[in-house]
Length: 137
Image (cartoon, rainbow, N blue to C red; front, side, top):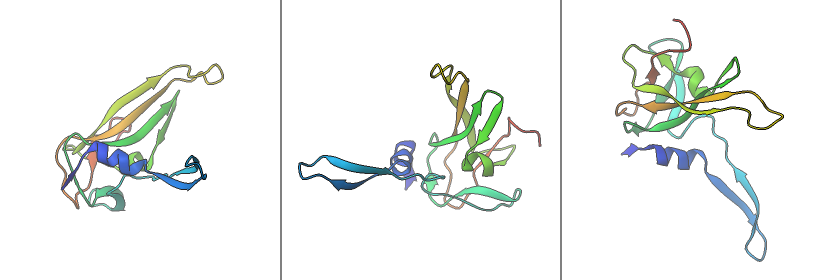
């Protein structure tokens, strides 16, 4: 079974209803934070150190979510961005998905978000890789 981007996002951003009032209105909603999307995990890599792996089949074109965020001159990595290893023949690519400027008058920094997207079908058990563009290897 292949998992696509919509299924990943539905799992990653699941919402749990904690309680309801007698009239049926939701009184509390807890959003479940998951540092990695469903099916991805970190383990020892045959490439270098630890790497990002999958235990589910991933379809080509699956958007796995944010890997990096650039705030001005600061580059932040999510767990996906921090553990994905380099390959000259990668199975994923980073896609610049959002660029904002001056979100509010108090926050006047530009930011850019990169998502990790599969560029081929990936089998369960494979390590996810990307060609590094932010770092020199």
